Image 1 (cartoon, rainbow, N blue to C red):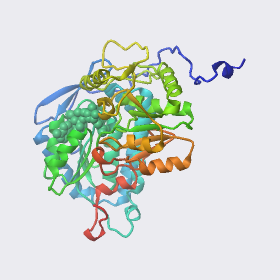
Image 2: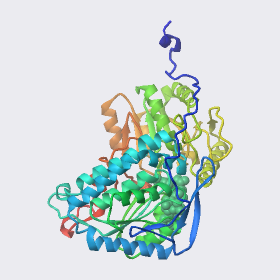
Image 3: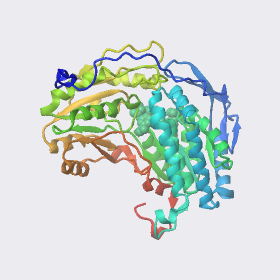
Image 4: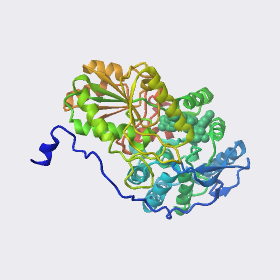
Length: 499
Ligand code: NDP
């Protein structure tokens, strides 16, 4: 009997593998014990005098002390950015700007291992993800936008694109270096200067990035990094010297920023939460679809705004899909983010862990059925086992609210119309996945789904050339591709198309 015959209808996934530990060496990362603010190309002590430790969520060990910027610090950073904008960067030949961006991209590649190890240490994500996804994509964004820097008239034909000025950028903790690249690369390519506020729990790769900027000899003040908590973000938003705000984070904070900026004339792009539908039709290649489900929700511990957190399975294939999914979950390795075999790392912070726990409890109380594969979680640090909820009604909190953790809610449908109706039944509209053999159905679904990105027979694919962004409470504006360049440009009034 062949191996295939023996397995019959089972997925080609072994029930268990024993792996020897394969830890990535962390001595490539040399951390300072304390970091100031990166303003005008220099490290400054925060005027606030406040420092807090950034800790590793996998071990709760403090990694370094980081400055908490206040109003005065933000003001200094904005002044440095304005000075750099007016006295050099905006007037630089575009091909010269491009050279800096290419240089940054190449240094990111050269220092990729160091950046990947630090990203996993500070944020808890598996090293294979920071090594194979976050860091290469961050470099790719700098390469991509470097290419546009001296071709802006071709990017926007028959218009006269000009930079805006100083961009204030606020990023979250789920993809710290990658979100930094999504924001800084197009802003600089367009000729703007930047003040960026990293998230409180994951500031360290942004601080290492300052070293990359120095190595690239980027003129002082073109990029300024103000670490701190939400207070620093709020100061940046309301600072009068900032011309544009780009924010990625929660819908709640996004709404507060939009209220604050109403009538101010500042440009704004918001990339907020999501509750994406991953829809599996009965003609889909099921083993591939199950891989797509796993990638959709357990990638980066589910700390992904476009995570496929609502799974819609066509009723006729519900049982085999759930059986295959549960079997596959049993093979996921949860643990040390620096181990090269780890699939699911640590939850980013205690606060986030508590939020996940609260929503999972709500799911159980509302009547959903929980499944977690047997797995031993480390004693120290913040961990949550990969979780699947079945028997979920659309009204349950776990089907409505963004959990931002490794928790999947499974629902069913019978017809394509029903799938669309249920998928769109959410205040969000960031992304969706469709799994089917039929090309015509993919196109039909993509038109009907109110989601900024629709993946077909794949999930969580990112590319710098492709725009990303949402509808409804997932925000507005696009990042990536040419669309991502436009919010960093201004045009003559007669040339503006769509604002
Ligand atoms: P936040 O929206 O609070 O954080 C995003 C960024 O905004 C951080 O840099 C944060 O600083 C900063 N910030 C916080 N308050 C303000 C403010 N008033 N004005 C300006 N900037 C501010 O997200 P959380 O980290 O609190 O996560 C909460 C939930 O948000 C998650 O559980 C998840 O559901 C969702 N989320 C969505 C993300 C996405 O990619 N769409 C990313 C992260 C979270 P600080 O880090 O100090 O709080």
